[in-house]
Image 1 (tube, rainbow, N blue to C red):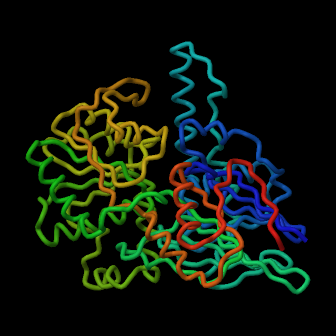
Image 2: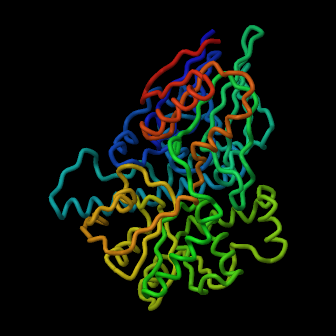
Image 3: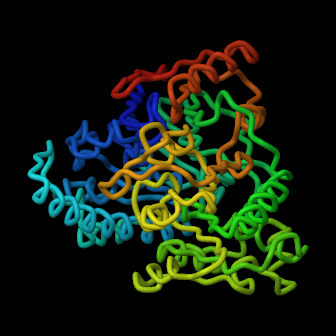
Amino acid sequence: MKIKLSFFGAAQNVTGSKYLLEANGSKILVDCGLYQEHNLKDRNWDPFPVPPNSIDVVLLTHAHLDHCGLLPKLVREGFKGKIYCTEATAEIAEIVLLDSAHIQEEDAAYKKKRHEREGRKTKYPEIPLYTIKEARYTLPLFTPVEYEKTIQVKDSIEASFHEAGHILGSSSIKVRIKNNGEERNLIFSGDVGRWGVPILQDPVIHEKADYIIVESTYGDKIHGQISDINSELTEIINLTRKRHGNVVIPSFTIGRTQELLYHLNELLIEDRIPHLITFIDSPMAVRVTKVFQNHPELFDREMSDLVRQGDSPFNFRNLKMITSTGESKSINHIKGTTIIIAGSGMCTGGRIKHHLVHNISRHESTVLFVGYQAVGTLGRQIVDGDREVRILGQMYPVKALVKQISGFSAHADKNELLKWLSGIKEKPRHVFVTHGEPEAARSFARLLNDQKGWKTSVPAYRDEVNLDY
């Protein structure tokens, strides 16, 4: 009996995570993510490589859009099985998918109106990839599982979920396949987090694997120190205050926003920054923060201590949680310096675009990036130094100060990925390096080969591999 592994996403690119595992007559999809790179977005509209009704179950590593964002399309086109994930992932995924559907409906309507006005024709009709109604059809399929608990996925196939330290509820997944008295273990890394990051517990290190599918977002880089974040934040916020501008922070609503609040709370407690009004301008981020508050059992010791002492970073003074559109618009009428945290983290949609319109051409303001910016996104264009960028259909000169803090990354860097793999005692049969831009993935694959002598490869989109049983 052969095991077949197909790479239908996050193969020599960062988003659209999707792996199909076929064994013992079963088909298991690990993640079902949305492509976010501009040059790959057309893939979101393509038919699935296999009929969705032929897939038995989905194993979901975590609730980021590039890992769960195509689930409603999968369900609409015929998938009816269970979606296994942790409880926190299920709760956050509900928020993410409904928000995604809402944004897509709004964007489709806006683009249709604009294209009609401009007389433009596009490859695809101005319709949402999926609707809010279709996203809701997905929710009953979520089946929460506990960390470290083995579940029977299909006959002779088991899976277990392990803390990945990336976002709340995130997991690496171990799949065990048994046949004729033999067993093979596959580990899907999902997105590996970092050690010592606020709020979350550290990633679990595995000891045994025959095959490993590992991410490489930062497989060729070393992050700044987490300990440097407070100093960099202090400098940027105080400088912008002197310039009488705003600090505009495109931020991922899951994990990054909450971690950012943790650091701001520390600086306020230490009186290192002025007590500015801080806006979380994202209904989604507000709801996700409530999920964090509902799962204190997932916090690390330091965060648990803060909550017990009444110093939770989720309710410090001058923190304003914005949900309505009217409240969001009113932010831009406030005189003086404010901190505006809004999604999306790569500036691909959401309210951040409107705040950029009001601030990116102001010398006084700062646009602060605290996360990875994929190739082809508006955020990447700004970080790369483009002097003029297109936002909501119009061109704007970039005059604001642009800063980036690398220590905020929720992804392990090269050394931390090596640490995550350090527990593997016996040489695996093969390591597949995915979820990274080609240069990063190939660099990390070479590193594993050179340092550990492991057989590695960097699969391409739609590659199919037969694994030795």
